[in-house]
Length: 249
Image (cartoon, rainbow, N blue to C red):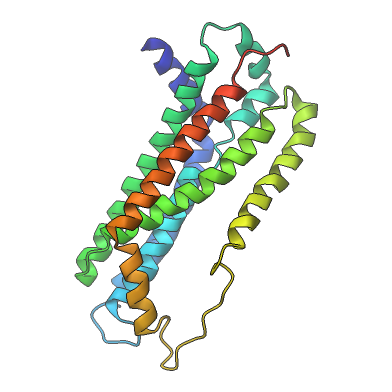
C-alpha cells in the first residue's frame, strides 16, 4: 500500500497545477450558470419553462465537469520531459502497478468533478423544484466517456515517445489523432444536424424537450453509459500498462 500511496501522491503533485486551473474554469462557469437563479429567473414567468432552463444549466455544468474530469492530465508529457520515464524502468514499481495508479488518479478526478457537478445540480433542483440528478449523471458520464476516448487515443500515440525530441513529433501526431477521434464522433447520425428554431422563440419545442428528457432520465441510458465507462476504464488501464512497460530506452 505504501508503494501505491507514493505513486498516487507523485501523480497528484505533478498534475495539481492543471487540476487547479480546470477547477477554477469549472467554478467560474458554474457560478455564471447560477446568475439567473440569483436574479430570480425561476420566480418570474418567461418563454422558457423551468424544465428547459434546468436542462440548459445542468447540461452546461455537467458537460464542463465531464470534460475537465476525463481530459488528459499531462502526466505522460511531464514524465517524458523530465526523463522520469527512462528512469522508471529501473525502479521497483512494475508497469502494472503504475497503470493501476494512473487509473485510480483518473477515477479520483472523475469522482471529484462529479461531486461538484452534483452540488450545483442540487442548487438548480431546489431553485426550480425539478429533480435533475438523473439528467446530470447521464450527461456527465457521457461527457467523461467521450473525452476519455480521446485521451486514450492520445495516450496510445504518446507512449511511443521516450525523450523530448520524440515527444515533439509524436505529440503533434497525437494531437491530430485525438482530433480525428473527435471528428469521427461528430459524424455520428444526428450529431451535425441543426434543429430549426421553434416559432415561439423557445430553445426547444415541447416535443423535442419531452423526447430529450425521456432519453436523459432513462435508466437504460444510464446503464448503457456505465457499461461504456467500464469498458473505457479497462482500455485506459491497458494502454497505460503498455505505456509503462519496461522497455529498453
